Amino acid sequence: MDKLIIHGGKRLKGEVAISGAKNAALPIMAASLLSSGYSTISRVPDLRDIMTMGRLFANLGAGFHYEDSKAVINTEKIKVYEAPYDLVRKMRASILVLGPLLSRYGRAKVSLPGGCAIGARPINFHLNGLEKMGADIKLESGYVIAKAKRLRGASLYFDIPTVTGTENLMMAASLAKGITLLENAAREPEVTDLANALISMGAKIKGAGESVIEIEGVDELKPADYTIIPDRIEAGTFMTIAGITGGDIILKGCRQKHLDASIMKLKEAGLSFENVPDGLRVTGPGRPAASDIKTQPYPGFPTDMQAQFMSLMCIADGTSIIKETIFENRFMHVAELKRMGADITVEGGVSTVRGISKLKGAPLMATDLRASASLIVAALAAKGETVIHRIYHLDRGYENMEGKLSKIGADVKRAKEDQ
Ligand code: EPU
Image (cartoon, rainbow, N blue to C red; front, top):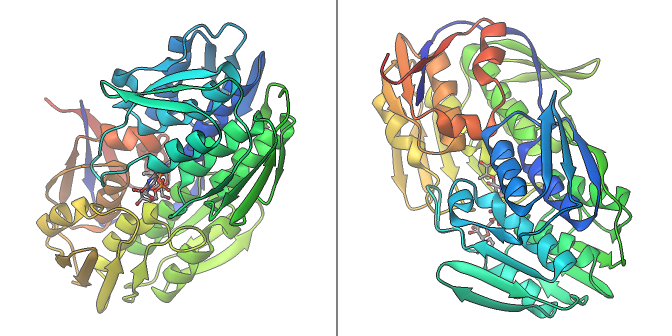
């Protein structure tokens, strides 16, 4: 197991190339199961979650080859319709194969993802939707066992907009008979990217990116040849890094419109933004100003940026109120930030962060993906040495983080736990 060792306090300056979006790549890889043949997906980040998905494909009997940010998936010889517990427990997004397998092969057996570090995260909306489309669904020994002759279109309403729920049902509906309406659908750019990939495969989808999506099922889809959007959360994380280090970072390939809410809030905190050819230049202030945030479904402030924004607020001039409304347990980073001297109190889903002038390095434990990122953000501005243990969480979702940080002047190195 690896750890990261960071000596903070450097002003980071230079260019960072933003990788493809993990949360778009995973559903688009799953969408390849809706067709037969070779799908080529480009700008796929080199991440542990992508490799877990690759293993899941191998398990289904699909070919999976990954090289130079390109994933080639051959779905001609699918012979197993199961996502086993061992893979699903490593990556909840494995649930994304449920809709495609059921819709194309009429059956699927997928381990029920349990709760995780950030919350209970049920999948009832996925299952209710598939049932309304005619699937027979049973829960047996921790598995979802789903069968259907051919799914049929249905009008579905989500009580809460769910990202992977919208994606699973959009994929299932693409091969269903008739029209499916998804109301109160998630509007995240990753959902739109999946819709665009499906449309390029021959699907008939209208309204992705809006809260009502209409899908007219077709009989057949062709394999995908598609390039994933840049990762808005990676870009947002580097924005907070520019903010906390008083840095000057050019984010190459970043799509500003996917980050409107984060950019507005970071501007309130004193960061400056300037469009440059093929990217966005972000400059940090001397000391950030306090700013309040409330996480919300897109286009609101993303829950996946909450922890990193909190790190920035730890050294802000003033008090910041941070409300987490998406996941009930997404403040695991607070206890670690406090070990660095941060002054934070949590009550329910609300954190009050009273800015201090300087954080101090400490040994820390990463608890989930975005919490790991937030600890890196904090460590880059802290005085002295920070050691972040259990960095494998980071490797699930950030491509070559320490390489990208070193390139812009950070003092960061990876070591084995026993070193
Ligand atoms: N929910 C239900 N029932 C469901 C589905 C969702 O109650 O059937 C609730 C959840 O418990 C949560 C809310 O609805 O309170 C929204 O959850 P959502 O389903 O949108 O989350 P997700 O699809 O499981 C994706 C991302 C997460 C990201 C969230 C929110 C992927 C693979 N994962 O999760 O990404 O935080 O949307 O934007 O796309 C990450 O990358 O670090 C990460 C956790």
